[in-house]
Amino acid sequence: MFITRECDYAVRVIRALAGEARLSVSEICEKEMITAPFAYKILKKLQKAKIVKGYRGVHGGYSLNEDVSQLTLYDVYHAIDPEMFIIECMHPGYSCVRDGEGRDSCAVHQELEEIQSEVWKLLQRKNLEELLKEN
Image 1 (spheres, rainbow, N blue to C red):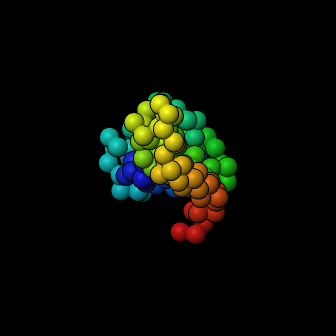
Image 2 (cartoon, helix red, strand yellow; image 1 turned 120 degrees about the vertical axis):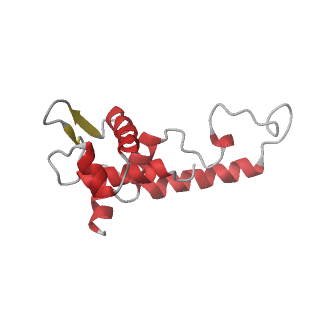
């Protein structure tokens, strides 16, 4: 995990769209100083997660599909990086050489699981409406 540039920019995209009926990609990029290719990549992921809605055509663009009062940083980050783990051994499919085959479970792994859980809780504690109001 830790929070990637793509996750950070996804929050910027949400911030640009908040309170707007619809914005073009160029308007989003101008408001938040993001390059168009990066914005398109982010918007595609946010659209797949149903956080934003895309419109085609001459008057196309993007709008929020969910109210910012219903979204948290966790929702946005998870849409961009669904495997948002602090370390690769948190991934459910990861096979650790320190676990299993008669060995005690890894105490470090157990501690990191608790930390991972707390990080997720902290990312969910405020909605984006609250956070965007603070800016």
